[in-house]
Length: 126
Image (cartoon, rainbow, N blue to C red):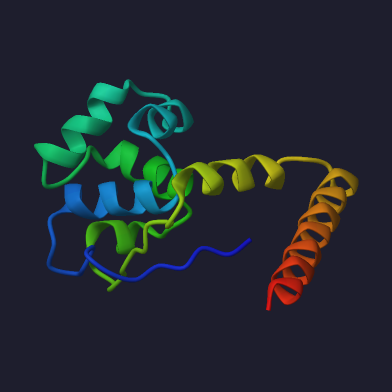
């Protein structure tokens, strides 16, 4: 599943704003990101609100956890971020990504079945 990035997090925005925008676009809470990085959620909140640059040893870890380059996170390369329209759904889809391939296939088949059923229902209402 690809991630689409575009928006508020521009090359000229502060590091914290870029960090928050990417984190939200990935459907992660501050606690989720902190757990991935191995630091407290308070440090993530601090990075997002109070600092212009994180400690060098955490920058690569943050970028890897968010699946972006350090250049994007630091603003050396332009990026923009779309937050998911439904973050609750987005988080569930991220769980599906962690399932074994056969289980993922079953979830996709169920979604396709539901979509066909919805389309049929809409056609009969016309």
